[in-house]
Length: 196
Image (cartoon, rainbow, N blue to C red; front, side, top):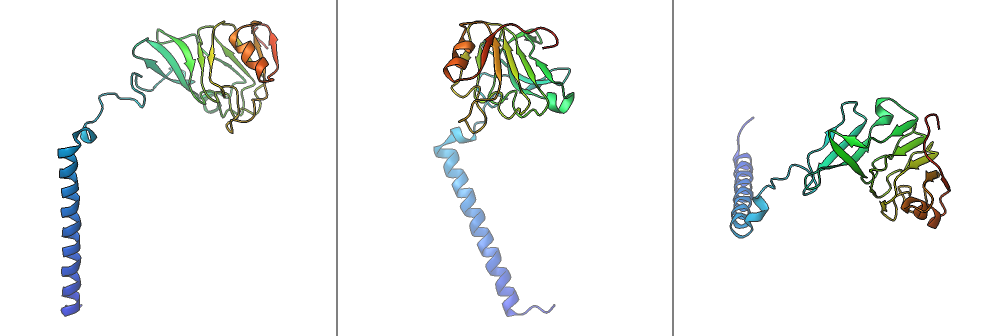
């Protein structure tokens, strides 16, 4: 290839434009560091939510969870049963690694094509948004506790407009009973027994 005036001119123009872009980028970076230093400070927190521990998994790989650093309580982030063992009954543990399990996070038990029954321990005190969404075979949710905070769409499908097609089995008059009754979700009194 022969270098002519056009080729040399194009290379010089390209180099000049590249130098201008780099200079502008450096100037913006210097300006931001000087006037907004907080942008460059990385948080010491290792997880997405402040105050929450790092994401961990139970030894059986069924649950991903975090531990609230202030209360030392476990929050279930995800149930992996569809990928691990395709169990039809998911029994949420009352304790993980010495920490009481007190909450199910948004979508924690969702998107499971196999589970028919979910058993919640009495230690659960909070169920967050669309926790049981997209579980087409889910028939029953058991809960034997009393006090339970439920987000508005806790027992709703992922579109947030339709309640999950499930029967709630719990103590008459507790928070889950009232939640189900108020939203037209079938509810009956009872407790989980092996084989249900």
